[in-house]
Length: 344
Image (tube, rainbow, N blue to C red):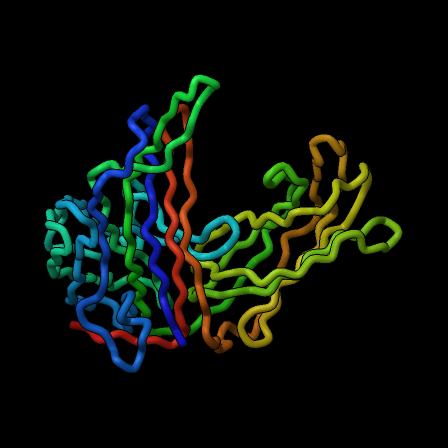
């Protein structure tokens, strides 16, 4: 059954020394007001089948599920692909080029008491020149109040500090526009790196099509004697159309200096395959440096019209911590591939 999991996400904005006590907090939830009873997923997020130049008018219900009054900012954002696949939402300060720029909210700031809710109308203005296929974004409720996080003790004398959090909630908005479906993923290259302290190879992937795809990856490293040293298979989450990532493949051990070949194969859609071979030269086991030399890969496909079954997708955001200030955002979603939502 198609479903969407919404997780309140935390934006870490500072660290402060405060008493170790849990405070009453406001917490906001977002939910569609109208939905298609034949598609359970539309009770949790928006899926619109629309046309170029159309205006979609609908509503979102904002609820304070916390125990004290609170104020939230409301705004729309675009989606992109996370580093390990799955859709992630861009920050509110990022330029809006897709659904995030199409959504017009009737209110940008809302104050609610405990367990109070309000219906906020909004419109989706689809540009006449928008490309065919699937477009993904989201509506964000950003709690203006800092909230209390975990308490951590510091030093032998028992001093402590607490992380202060600003919570965000996101409801996904997907717009499907008519036209030829194109499923096309390119393997753009491989390069060395580390992941969580382990040696890794970063595989460059780009969804050059116009629909969400969920590839199956096979990654191999072969030495100059033809022996396969690494053979890993992964099921990736969704790749958002017109986005690129460097997907990390963690190795169980570092490779010795020398020349190798990396083979990358992606299967997705119905009979769609992307394949690339790359020459890898390991120059230093301490830094696990690789060099790559090969012609640009070509993705073979079935003309871009392959069908799709249920396509779960994950939404997550990553954060940056500098000094005493940091940012973290996490949202997880799942959806099906054929859902429709009524237009209010």
